[in-house]
View 1: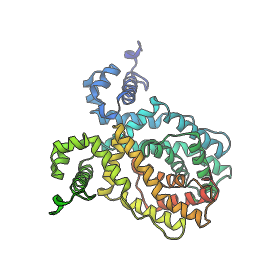
View 2: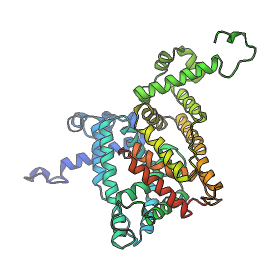
View 3: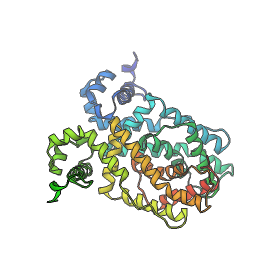
View 4: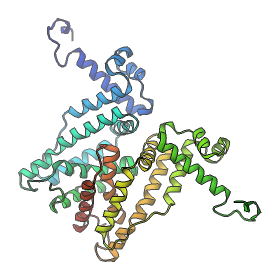
Length: 202
Length: 202
């Protein structure tokens, strides 16, 4: 912004934040376009328009860029469903996962950070923190089900989300089988049946 | 063997088979030691004692070595449990997975082929075929449960195995959280509850 230099305190959303956002966007775009194996500071510099010496100084290198991109994503708000039932919320969540994993622009960065974590301890740490944050955000749908009396008080709400998410990622990254509405349906029914049977009680 | 040159037909288990086994063992050893990113034909040649021109001629390159290693593993027999109940068999299977994923010598090659599949379409194809074979082998425990009348006739036996395996791999490769007896227990109970509720019926 034109008036930025005049402000006394640096606002959040000021130049530093804008540079960070541009760099993170460029990192994800590079991951989507070429994957982790070909991610370089030079390419992120070129795509973001931020000088590579700045990137090296602030992010250290490719690992740091990836870790910061994941940290940024982990606090990014997203629409956690609230349909009024756990069944409805899980269906919605399943549709979100299916959608993300069947579109290259969201699928490729997701895969890229998973593969990066296999090669970089720093990326691995960032990935664990990212999924921990996502699990906690998504677990709100389970906590609401507990409040409504759908599930017992002592339900391990995060374990419900883990169990629900696992088959999507299993097909995506491990067996590399197609994801479809039928498998999402099985995932929903599996978790509901297990929850009803008290499997997730602490 | 000393008498090999004398035999008219080439036996399975002859020189060709021994070379293949040495090469595959060396490939897995290299994956365990250094991972996929550093797998080279030269290193497999050195470790196996097979000349690299032979490796290039028969396997083409790193992708071919990896695909053949997976093809070899997919027909390798393993002890599918037979405890008399689905519960017992799943517990046994869970213990096998926990054991494999908590020992570096089996964990690292498993991870390596998963990451390789993210970078090589040929490795991806081989990985899918490998898990298809493994699912079918393991699904025998579910088919037996159907025969015993524990589960309905129209159970999708492979889907039971997929659902059971997913949380182990999810923690291993995606969230990179520790695997423990408690999570294996939840995986067993989840699948049994879902199966009892008819979730896996076609």
